[in-house]
Length: 383
Length: 120
Image (tube, rainbow over all chains, first blue to last red):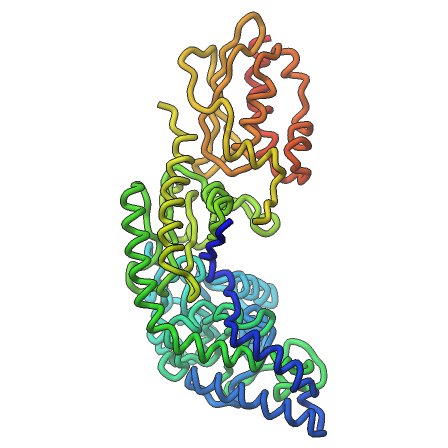
């Protein structure tokens, strides 16, 4: 059966160049980057080169980049790594963050940092007025994601950072869904900390990085040999770090070309949705990551739609599964926060395109989408 | 494609039996345990203490669609007393769902049984 992968916001297939460099690195750069002999130093040099490349891509200094296991660890490092310098000061985040931030903020609340959650408007944009009001409480950090993972909305990070800095708060952004999809520059955004994950931009899984502005103090999450200038102990994962740097370079170079394609496909899918009827596109119509669509169809169950598509070989995700992880039920906190009517919210799927998708695949998706929504609506029809 | 569901569940989800609305029915009953707009409405025609015919309209997850379909096949033609003796667990087991947190598998039968008690 034909397989059409349209879930790139969940994870991406690694670029062939990435796979090749991983194999080469494991073969030639097996030395421990902390060893003083030549094998170790060869790995060290390659690791530092990867760091420099990543730093350059996001407008940072190499010493501001720390290799981690991915987005979740970086988010924890940002919020937990800095908290002890600001005892009992509040932490501000948005209600549409990824669980890696939300759960960390909840954990901080139990350590005495009052947790404040910014609402969003019905297009998923953070309420800046609410932020201004909450900044009066002197929070130690404001953490707002750059692009949302479910609806793709891009947040006004520059404005958020400027407002937060006026009141002396640190600014962290979870940029996991933005890197490799849009231009990300820490200087332009004005953020102090940033989280990234390689597998979202066609790199390997289990590696990411954390940007920490030079003059910001942070403590490690766990103790060990003092790797990564004391912030992240554990033998450096040199092959995957090199692969991540390459993946970031390629995806950043590619995105202007893929954007054009994604916009064309988005228009095609939305036209098909018009034919289907009773649908809505969630999130901001323009201020969004190209190629990521959150679609809600009235009077259907999103999980049933996702499964019907899957049975036709098409992979998308749903925001309304009974049991996507463990005890989660109903549709997601992001979709809830947009205030969408439940007859639509329940029928939500996320379609996220990637570099390997073809016109033929999008045509096939459109055809099966229409058929599947019609089939499920027929099940409900009691006329 | 890796199918996380049993062949029987997949078959009933993809091709649900007895779906639609009966023209002549003794009662209709809607499950009140689904949420977020999901629902099942059963239409049941009784004759001489038996389920002569049954149908349903549904909006829900793959499991609740499949179990509604399977349950409808199972109860059709049966005496009310026989339906009341049926076990929700049997349906869950046959459809290959052993996770007790999936109430949706059990819901169709329990909804029917509750209403059928009035017709004993």
